[in-house]
Image 1 (tube, rainbow, N blue to C red):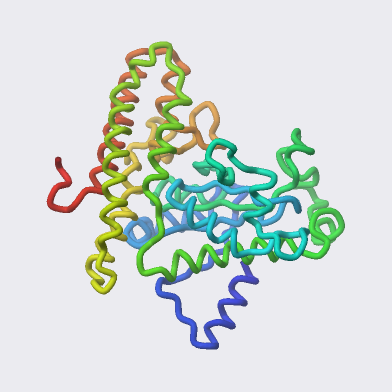
Image 2 (cartoon, rainbow, N blue to C red; image 1 turned 180 degrees about the vertical axis):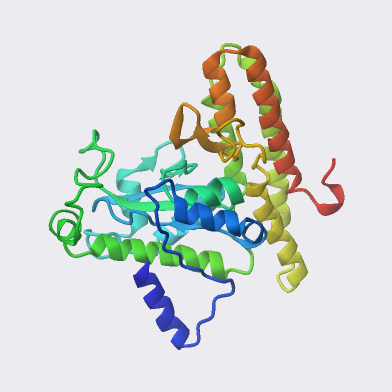
Length: 343
């Protein structure tokens, strides 16, 4: 993060001024229930809810020297991939990019694209932005080879007193090449998000994410998901229409650009349930990607429905499917034309 600020500072001295504000934050008390970042979000939640575009999290910039590992909102998929094509891969021959290495070792054979996980969970300072604000966020790290060290969740000295500068230099990133790569990658993503007049969010990625999340639900009676399935199909139709209309934007008209960008920002926020998951889980607000009660660390697709399915309580399943359906339909309405959002 400091390296990115140094580079942007040099750019600023040469006349660079970002189109949108870039804010750099170093949080305190992360290990004590994310106190610093959550306190900040809670204090400024209204301002952040109205203005923030994205939060880029680099809690652990480097865990290994193999390839990138990224969790994100579906809408940021394309931005991340395009940025990865511009950054040299760490510890690889000259000319090989992060994207090239990604496609070599961690790719989706069905789509011929890099693998990116959707949903962030609660394990770092992205939580407040993800669950309380509803911005579209990224959590990124440079990772070790999981196929070789498949039993490791992180490097063995993680969260020990041996986790010091010399450990990183001796065992993980001797030349700090992976750190440089992560700085470049996050820097390019930040510039993409701050500099393009029209936000390069891809709403159609959300259709795929919604379907994947729904298909991972395994109720005894699959028909209970039919209302949600139909809502997702309608979301698909609306998202495709939105993408079609995006090609007709008058780029000389700032009002059209602002209206389009506002719709993009509102989509993620529309998935927030103000009541959360109820009880002790009111901060788990994102209907599509949030921690489930059975796993409060990782993100689960449609977590409240997933929890209900786990109980086998048919009434609770129907209730949670109805809630999820309501929010998916609310989200798709944010993508409709302003004079026709209720159709």
